[in-house]
Length: 580
Image (cartoon, rainbow, N blue to C red; front, side, top):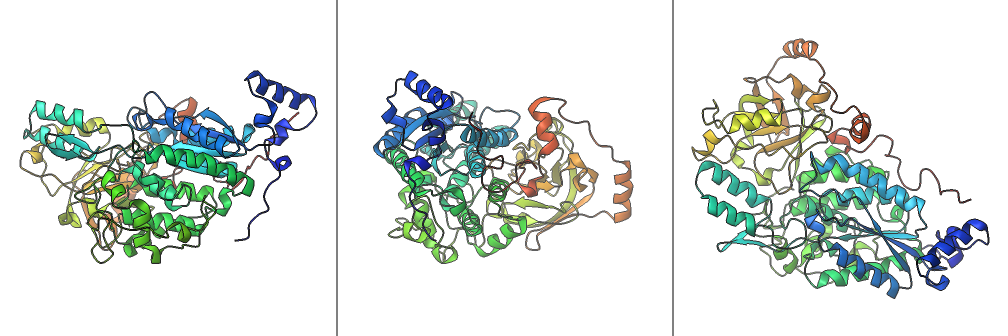
């Protein structure tokens, strides 16, 4: 790849605001001086935006106030001028009905904030599930040099001598509480010990998956995604991001040189090898399409069949958490293990290729990061299904469910809403067997609304009392990356817009075959046509505001759920703003 000549100060994007000797630039300079700056502090220097998704309700980013200062210190050391800009936080824990409803809002805000301000480059501070794709999608479309700073996982959870994984053990112990096998005091003990520091989930959930994807794409400093949030390496990494982004501006190292088709495939391969969240597919498709790369569901299935899962990290792995993964060598070590499967010529934010960045990487614990000869699971993390229930596709995470359900046939037990299902599963007299296939519909992008994480349907209490902890479950929802079980997700098209899932009835036979990648209802075509003719579209979820806009423009799960008017590829589609 040929290098661009280094920029001169006059060629900086921010110079359009600050250099001309006209009335408007006079106003810009005087207002900077109003903030207490001398001209020499910001003129003729790269102006770097630090997009900070800190929030008083985002526990994953509780340390971001301090990390922003570390980044600003690095920018100053690198000879740039840093400005911190608050960004929508879309926290996973408290945002309802789902933070996925606002991922595209963050992407739009990021793109427009970059475009409308005198920024030459940006450091994107994210980590909690939707912040990584939202920030990256917006920055891709804005087209200025960017570097991603991942929040990092929290430290291990603990209770009564047991190691706890956020999310995963919450689901596990909730089932035990419902089954009556643990006490209220034990439940409260798990509650107080499962999340013990700043940082995102320390399982290989969606947050760790998406920061690993950004790392594998070449958008972070090498291995940055593995560093725990409260480790001393983390502030050092933050200041290094600040120094590096200044150089990236002078080098004019823009996203289009980094996010290529090969980089997107690298990210998908690495995701499969880590035991990634099912959410990886919907977000990576959206990120790739912003970059003009048409990644399809079938690409993920092909790569999944060819890529062994080698990260022994919960929930797909059995024993370890992200802190252990970091100590075992982190993402660089995992990528070194599968180096022959990657395109190591891809450019990264370091200005070096992936291959150069992987030099010297080593595995320090080969039970945490397995060799290819001893994988956790022989194929990758995810499988893509097709059939008359999901003509546009559905997703399952085979390594995180009971192998007994890899091939299954049983009667459907269908619920039209989460409230209906929740009431039913707590009824100990519910007529249900382990062979039943639980189905939740109207929980997709339109129906949820917003595609909520309802897909790990709770096991009916009647079965929990009998000792069962898994069963086949199907929905057009997503599920948390910390979840597990025989859960088929992202059924597309969703029921709310008339997908075949809307036609399924309780008692219909459902047939699933993982090896064949098939998901079908055993109902003849004539009967399905009769049901379709009788189907009535539900009332729209929204009449105004953001929800109305979301419903009018969001895509289905198989296309990444981006807005139809935002899939425009690289660069500032609206052009640089006029300055008068």
